[in-house]
Length: 462
RNA sequence: UCCCCUGUAGCUCAGCUGGCAGAGCAAGUGGCUGUUAACCACUGGGUCCUUGGUUCGAAUCCGAGCGGGGGAGCCA
Image (cartoon, rainbow, N blue to C red):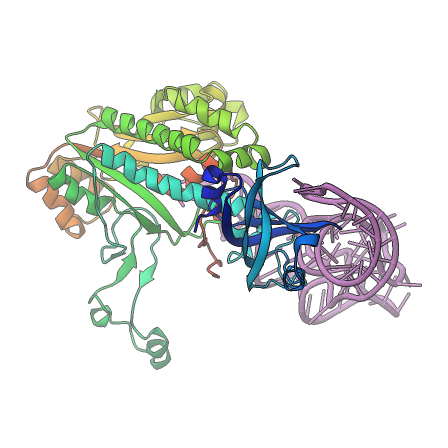
């Protein structure tokens, strides 16, 4: 059986076929009924026309029971459509109903719904235009990620989701346990983690980077792409408690190659979307974010600007009255600063490099000035930080000193430090938040609307 | 976690200085029409988020709680 995408693409006028899908709308007229059928294979639906004079009583009765949301099969002949709105349509000959969808209770109506409302029915929202389009683009972007790295000889490494090290250095972690916490609390006993499943406290991973570095030091070019978890109580349109992250890592590479990879990567993904998701992007451009396609095309053919942190601060200081937080050398760049740089100064993607060591992670390569590290953040308009990365500190003594400076215990990182003890080499990588990329590509505002089942504080239904 | 806004019909919202609960859309019925965000008429539809208070009287004013949105922080 052909899906609707194939029918619309390959179907020849005059051919008999069966289409299966879910009814978006039914419009009745005296002479005919029009059923728009969508099966999710593409943005467009197939208009099925039921001629009242050509239907037997069984078909008429079946059509009576069809309403928005019903799952049906329509058998008929593909014909050129006499009306504008669609080049072809299905002249229906019979109708089979798999599942009715009572109109008085089905939550999706043939009208626009707010995204807030649709979040409350996340099990039904993929049946809408917006979420169908998001799902298709999300699939293409995931495919493009693997394609990009495969073309460049990177190996996909599956880093663990459960970790027993609480030192991944990126935020609050969710604890994982099989202990009977209720019973322990009831009995007033202390918690003995040596009796827990892993014999020690364990968590959901906040980053695959430390693990993927181990494979980087063996396979050279690697990446990980999987879910990560942050137990931060952050409630914003750009944070999730469970999100997907892509983290490449390259051996024998320094910061410039890291930046080049990041730029190529983003352009590759945007190009892929432009090339393969035309209908869906056209919808986003029309209804969600006007100018989206022109923006994506602009970025694809642009050169990312480069700016050192020092120069960025100098630029911000020139306009300091515009900011709530006054910029100064050593400050962490605030959201308002990042957006000013990318939206007003550069008006496009910009890579900011060489941040002060005190505001960045311990594993970043220390510059010779003793004050900065070889870090880079890619900032894009509307989204802000989409990529954070760095060249890694590969000198054992410098890395240990950096840990101690930040109050970390090197013993906790024994296996990570072993990578610097045995055959250490320069390497660099970054992390790209997949849902932030999705916000960028689709123009969707809230990150909860670009992942099928969002996990955020107080939000884990479905 | 902090700041601001918000919670009224299935959905989106109006409801003024406190005085009988409203509209559009959706749904149901009828009509019209190769329709396509269909159109016209009629009908049904409410724990005004919860809780405590003020008042003769609270959707409306005040307190507390819960939910939703936006901004900030944390970050990807």
